[in-house]
Length: 565
Image 1 (cartoon, rainbow, N blue to C red):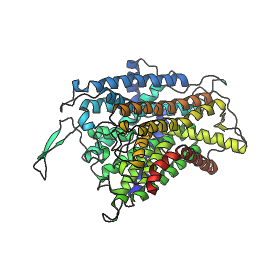
Image 2: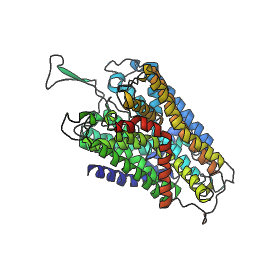
Image 3: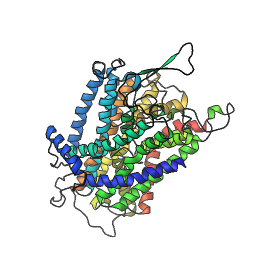
C-alpha cells in the first residue's frame, strides 16, 4: 500500500510540474517571468551572455563542454585545498589528488559516486558550496541538452524561416541552464529542504557535537556526531537525481532520513522531475499521444522492476537459512523501512540516475541485485533529469529504424527521415556501454592486487561490474564493501564517468541537429504511428533485447549464477 501511495503521489505531482516546465521552456511569455526574468537578465549581463542568441547543435554542444570544463577545474582545485578554506570547524585535512579528481568529475557528471565518507573527509565548505553548487548546475545541464534535442525533433526554433539543409536554432544553452536552476530546481529544493528539516534532518553550520551515550562502555563514553546544512544537500541530491549524501551511509543514515515521512518525501523527489520531463516533452513536441506512450513504456518497466525486487527481498537471505526465523532479507536494511520500502528505493534510485540508498545494495538478494543492474544498463526508465529522456529517445530512434526495416517503411520520426549517418552514430551508443564496462571489469578482476572486492566468487565479480555500471550510467550507487578509494579505482572510474556522460548526450544532440535540418515529410498511410500499442510493445522489446544480448554473460557470471548457487 505504501509503495502504491508513493508512486501515485509522484505521478500526480509530476503532471502539473510538467505543465509548468512546458510553460517556462516554450519560449512564450509565462507568469513566472515577472518574478524571475529580472534576475535572469542581471545574471546574463554579468556573464556577458545574450540569451536571445540561438545556437545550432554544434554551438550548443561546445557551450555545454566548455562550461563543464571550467566548472570541473574550479571544483578540482577547491577540493585539493579544502583544508585551507573557510567553514572547516572540525579541522578536516586535504584529499589526495586522485580522490579530489574523482570527486570533482563524479559530481560534474551528475553521478555523485563517492569514494570518500563525507562527514569525515570533506569540509563544510566542500560539501555545502562546491558539491551542492554542482548538484544544482549539472542536472540543469542535462535538462538543457534534452530541451535542445526536443527542439531538434520539431525542426528548431527557426523552422518557419530555414530552408532544407540550413542549420537550425536549438535554443540557447546558457538561458536553458539558468532557467532550469532558478525557476525549477531552487524553488523545489527550498520547499523540500524545509520539509526535511521539520522531520529532524540537520540544517546547521555548527561543528560536530559530542553526546553522551545512553549505554556507555569502558572504551566509549561519547559519540562524535558531525553536523552541517544536511537538509539542503539532501533536498537537491534527490530532486536533481544526484544522489551524493552528506554522510557515508547516505539516506540509510538516520540524520539524512530519520522518519517514514522523510523516506516517502525523498522517494517521491527521486522520480518527480524525471516523470515531469515526460509530460513536458509532450507539450513541447505538441504530441501528447507520444508522451502517453513514453509514460506507459517507462511505467511498465518501472513496475516490473519494483515487483521483482520486492518479491526478491521478501525471500529469506540464503546465508541465514536454518540459523534464524524465516522472514524477508533484512541484511543491510534499516528496521524502520523494512524490505518493501528498501526494495522500492533501490529501484527508483537506479531507474533514475540518482544513486542514493536507504539500504545497502551489496546485501540485496541476487534477483534484486540483477534488477538494479538492469535498471542502470537500460538507463531510460525515467533516467536522470533530461538525460533520461534523451536516452529514451535513442531507443525510440532505434525502434523506429528496426520497425521500418521489418515492415518495409522508410524509417522516419515526426516527419523526418532517419538515414545511414544517424543510425551509424546511434550504433556507437549501442556498443559503448559494453565496451567500457566489460573492458574495465575484465581488467580489474584479472588483477587481484587492484580489485579491492570484499567477496569471493560470483558476488565479487558483481561488485566490480556494478561499480563500473554505476559510473557509466552516472548513477553513483554501489555494491559497498569494495575498496574503491585507490589510484586504479579513482582513475578508471573517472574515464568511465566521462565516457558515460558526454557521448550519450552529445551524440543524440548531433542526431537531433541533423534531423532538424531535413525536409519535413507529410504524414501518410506509410507513416509509422508512434502512439500505438504495437509500437510501444516493439519499443519495450528493443530495450530489453539489446541490453539482454549485450550483458547476458555478465549476468550469468554475476547475479544469475549467484541465485542458482
